[in-house]
Figure 1 (cartoon, each protein chain N blue to C red):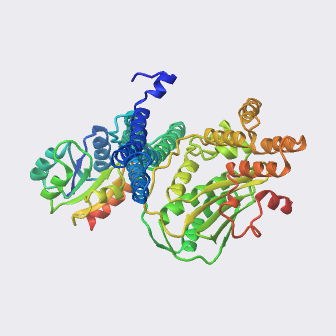
Figure 2 (tube, one colour):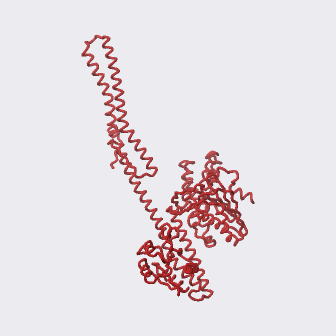
Figure 3 (cartoon, one colour):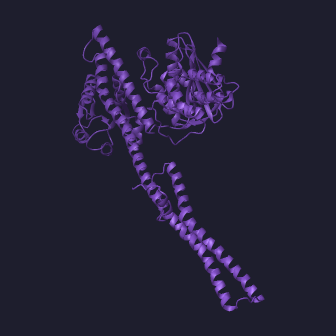
Length: 474
Length: 118
């Protein structure tokens, strides 16, 4: 498309102005012509200088007629102006809103043959381009999910004969083994099990990302599920002499997938056991909380640093590289938990203090969400959080926010505590007022998953933040 | 008279592994590499149990199931039983078990014994 220069000439002779000037000229010409005709007739009918009552009456009537003609004229002009300008602009506005909603098929059909119809054509081209990009993005996304799913299946099939042969060796199908051979086989078996677990978790993630996660909703007594899960996990807890303390309120029977619920709970309790010292305890709570049931698993283990708290739900993120070897696991458990919880429109978050323990909480809606949506569990939550923080900076500090954010990022000071210190320094130096500083802190806190302002509106009183709780206990 | 088991799987390593396991436990074992082969072997040998992989080239499993109504069949598959159910594969009455791959050897032996003594 050729770009036109915005000169005065172009402005005056633009199609839309030409059209408007025709209308204005027409509107002025019609009454003027009428007045001219009237005086022409008047001068023909009455000799000059003679003013009779008849003439006065005629003049008044004529003025009225002219006024009426002018009004009709104005109406006609209004109609044309609306048709050629307002209506297409309204259409354009409607189409833009549709586009914002994600309807890339919307097309405009403006036939005014002026700048507005040109704008309409440009809009159509842009929308088509956006539509192509969106389609491409979806295709890539599907291909990724498909690839993940196929790869996992393909990886899984060699596991079958491998594991079978290993077990046959171990069970003496091919003769008795000596001690060294047995040890070697044990190591192979343990690692092939681990590999298999990773593949299974991969499959689960591909299902979550493709919204193919299956939920079998049925009316379930929550306390029964929790009890069963606890019984299952108790064996693992006893190995480290850890006590599982259960505290379940009286809860309504709800429509939920018991296996999925149990899967999330097992995962959280398993983690809690892994990161607890021997002889400690783990508290498992379930209570009604507005439209949700709130579950939490609290341990008194090593806790998490701020940075780890953000990233703990990322796939393959483990607190230290050594912890994977020490604690085992695939590194996908919490990512899967997040997928399962969020697919049902619930939330999952962690509150923790290093050295004091962690509390993982998640919510399950009372009314099941049957339309399961794809969740991007493979995305890094750290990047997402950084983006949100940057936006918050810009909204509070204006354009300055960007550079301030970059500086903090370079100093590697984007943890919650660092940010709170930074905001305190801003208010101390009176760069921002106290109130704004508090608001800033609140927003930052929310980004870091301080969900209680959102979810726990109803019982702020009995729900202390973990930090307070820990301080009270010590 | 030992019972005859037909193993149908397109992967040779799986076939051979299962064959060794079952032979060591005293069963007569036949193998088939795909659906067509399976139907032929069933005609020839009339096995007591068929261990059938769900995903195979050649004749689709649904067809095989239609033609074999009177011999016990146990599925072996990497997909989960819920997926198999969704595909409508588990409704027939001669389908007696579902072995999730990778299977556990002693578990396989126990369950096969249970099926054939029933």
